[in-house]
Image 1: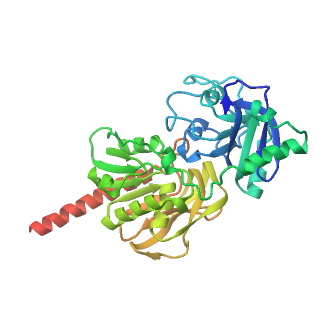
Image 2: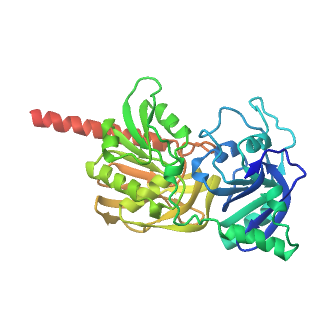
Image 3: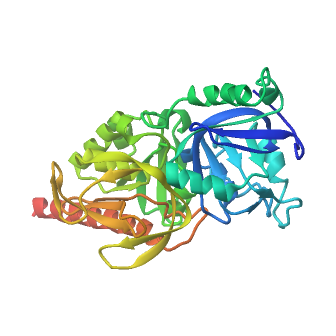
Length: 399
């Protein structure tokens, strides 16, 4: 339950499931909220972060100390609402300054009922999460905080801690259906249409179909519950699996769909959650990272070219695939195409015998660097080559 406020002086408390507590001031809505505490290292792009469906049920801690400088505009949202469960900042901007700003970040959080906290040491909190790992957290302010004051001191903290520990875990959470569109829709190609793509929405960001549309692709965005028949009803030249929240170990339906696409040898591209789905479809396992990768400054190497890219990330799970060999899968040979230079986590997969690849990060760059934009061009090349191959086969059969 939340109420709206510009609560610059309303006390607020953040409680981690291991018992550590931070006290600050309410930011955004007043009330209580629960989720998985994660940190994002981006110094900008907070509006895109807040509206990324992949952050569903997560309380995001911003490591950059000063947040809200450019306010909130009506152009940069990645979906129709804020998805984060809660928001944690150190020093909120007192007055936003940007020619596109329509309102303050505080006002937007309050209007959408997002409970936040400000005025805490986010550097100390980030270090704690790096050392102990991502964990459940609660933020309490206003009546939600007052109601726990039946006791004082340790009794008060124990009441709040019990609420945090009763919240659901991220591991084992199946969340795609909660964030995906319920109705199919089309993003038309910009300029001359070259290809049709069926995009499975597992928590898709708005800029992703936009990047494809810029390349002459008509994108049919389908619900997470779509069937293989739904996918092929649009007569796709390629199939795309989006980013999204939750534990990939629970994603049985998307994995089954992915396998159906691989069997038909249709060009396939996956991003983030889509990379984990491809990993599972190929027979690899997935695992939860200690604290994940989130932000717009993560170094990744394309192992095919040796090029190092600065990339945008948002993932707490990863694919367990060998870095040092080509693997045999039910769909031919597969290899790790990209790797994170910070910790050797798998950041991309590609099949060598079928037109399919994926990356764990976000080439749509919203927000973030544009180093990985070439991946959309690679998808276009896969579809073009596949279509030319199909034409050649048909001509050969007629001859």
